[in-house]
Every structure is written in structure tokens, then in C-alpha cells.
Image (tube, rainbow, N blue to C red):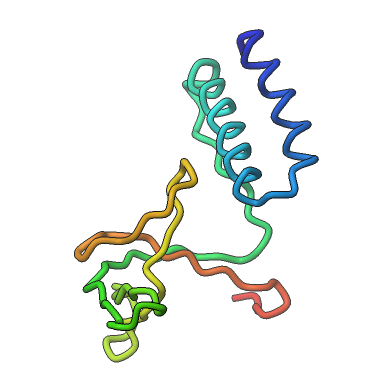
Amino acid sequence: MTPEERERMNELCVQIQEEKNYDQFAIQIRELTDLLARKQQRRFTNHPQLLWHRNRPWTTVPAVVNKVIKTGIARQPEKAEISITPADYLFREIRIENSMTSPTGDAVALKPGAKIDVTLEADPKDTVAK
């Protein structure tokens, strides 16, 4: 790491520990992640990229946004109808609020036809060994 990156990383670590506002916390975590990724790209090019460790059982499946549904009621948010590709035919679609957060913390929405990944996590006590 450069001296400037090291200093910024130390500042971020202190700020993250003290932060009470979630949005600001998320921005700081992303900046810290970017610093670590830059170091990894410069220093460890011959190694696989690290992923944050998950502490719960999980799986990720492909999905597609079929359509975006406007509710017609001002107070109700629009919905995204999502088709989870590997699911059984009759149980493939879900509808959720069409609201996401970009890596920079901005509010964004899905577009019809978007190819997405759906990650499912479970509490370890709710799983059995296979």
C-alpha cells in the first residue's frame, strides 16, 4: 500500500467503528473494500481473488427481471417480477419492491430483461447436512 492508502485505511477503520448512520457506514465499507482490492491487484496478481467470508449457508442462482409493475397508487412502490431460472416452472416468479442500492450508495431500480443473481441465505440451525 502507498503511505496515503495506509493512512486512509487507518482513518476508515476508526470511522467505521464509530459510525452510527448505516448509509455512511456502507460508504466507508465500500471505500475500504476498494483500498483492499487495489492492494490485491498490485501485489497478489497470481492468486485468486478473495471473497468476503460468509458465516451462513448460502446459494446463488441466476434470474431475470420479467417486468416492472407500477402499482397505480402513489404511496405504493413499483414491483419487479423476477423469474428464478432453476426453480420449478409453477414456482419460478417472485415480486419484490423494485429498489436497490448502487455500490456508491445511490438508489437504483431494476430494468425489464436484466439478468441478475439471487442469493439465498439460511440460519445454520435451519439446515441439515447432505
